[in-house]
View (tube, rainbow, N blue to C red):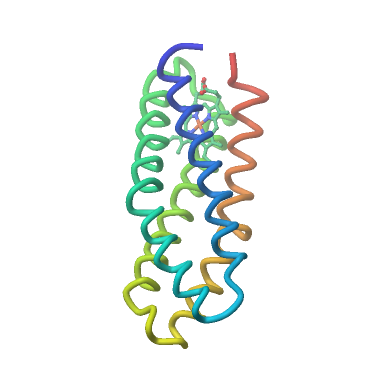
Length: 141
Ligand code: HEM
């Protein structure tokens, strides 16, 4: 495996680990005070760690795509699934930022927390699983 492919996997691994940490932060918050603390922690994680990792996944993915010699349907499906996973997480980052900005309003805090807990399992994780399955089974060498 060359440097670019290793970089793609390294960024994906770090991102996957971070998403698990964020899951614990979100699911561990049981009342409004804990939700407010989770809003702050998740915001800091997103701004300082997740956005740079998403940029790394995207940059290495695009660089890999640019050097694919012959494009197949598997490549298109893999890249589309990867892009949906990245887009779902970027949407989540926007909601995390909005929740942080309005965390003193209980109704907004609760509404955005529910949305954050839904987007990843409903959209981000299935798309990432498809991209990972195609990537590991068909493209890893
Ligand atoms: C959740 C997101 C993603 C996952 C789980 C994922 C997973 C993988 C894996 C396991 C590989 C094989 C190992 C390697 O070559 O490094 C791979 C390769 C690749 N990925 Fe991703 N990836 C994701 C996002 C993306 C994105 C957003 C793009 C494009 C913008 C992309 C484009 C590619 C390309 C072009 C390859 C190489 C295909 C080949 O070798 O012919 N990936 N990916």
